[in-house]
Length: 169
Picture 1 (cartoon, rainbow, N blue to C red):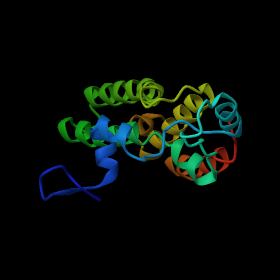
Picture 2: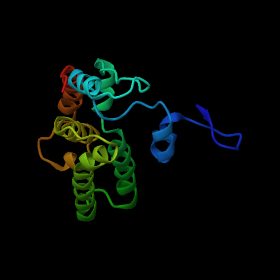
Picture 3: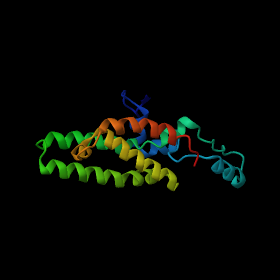
Picture 4: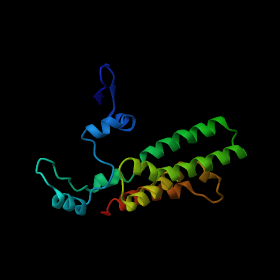
């Protein structure tokens, strides 16, 4: 939590991180892009002055957190509830809205990562697959597919997330 400017309200850091671009640039918030040993070595070779700190290689937990596209997951969960609230169950409008919403957010996932400063294609791919698994675990348009088993995806999601964080890109 942090004190927000001149008010007496406290706001959690994640909300400030998403809502305030200046907070991201001025604070010690971890960058979104994975920092590998190769990145650290390039920074050491290219360093002109010693007054700038060298980046530190991301550990397992950092990679685990950075691969999860929480921005698009939050929007997906919100719009999923909204669409299901304003439409009739099983209507054509609901099916179309759910699929359009999913496809749009699937496309926006790598764009959101790019806007956060990510430039590694491997991280784009991992985050895009992560979003697909997260979205499927919540159901929505996937529940409309005959034979779809949300339990299988919900079991696969943590396994994927834990294993993919082992990879150092």
